Amino acid sequence: MPRGGKKGYKGRGKQFSNPEEIDRQMRAQREKEANGGVERESASDSEEESSSEDEQDQKKSGVAGLIEIENPNRISQKSKKVTEIDDNAPKELSRREREEIEKQKAKERYMKLHLEGKTEQARADLARLAIIKKQREDAAKKREEMRKEKEAQEAKSKR
Image (cartoon, rainbow, N blue to C red; front, side, top):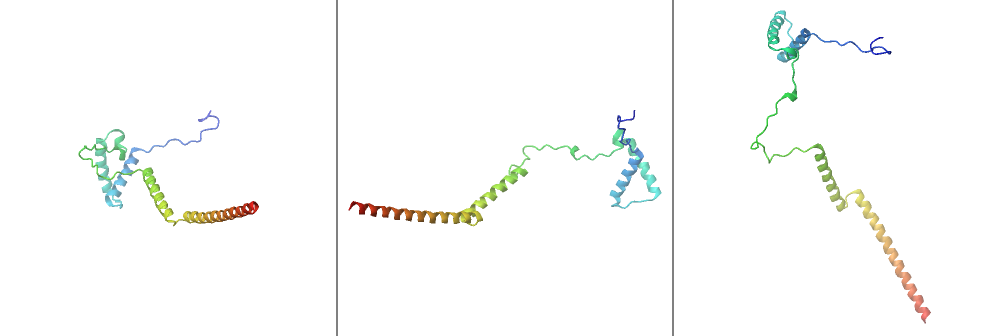
């Protein structure tokens, strides 16, 4: 039966690069960094570099000789003394805290404009209030007239 069961094996075989290829790539990268991106192609230079590379490979053992590691997390954290910590320095806010503060400021600005009557909602509210006041005044006048009419009818019926 083939690898992978009945359906067959579709994956590729693993390919590993050899140490010479890795060394050549690392040398080319160092040359680019040292020469500002310009590569040298003379045979004598490459022979000298390979001999110096061999010396460095002998010093490094294991995987460290093959791979140059630049792990930013590997930097040791320096602990600060209590006397070095500045209490007056502004504290960095998290994204949520900043958004919350911005939201509160925006709300305060809106309420200030709303109280001044400069927002659309405030204008609509004031117009609605004016209409309601007018309706209430009209209703009060009507009630007053009805009350007067009733009193007048009662006065006529008593005579």
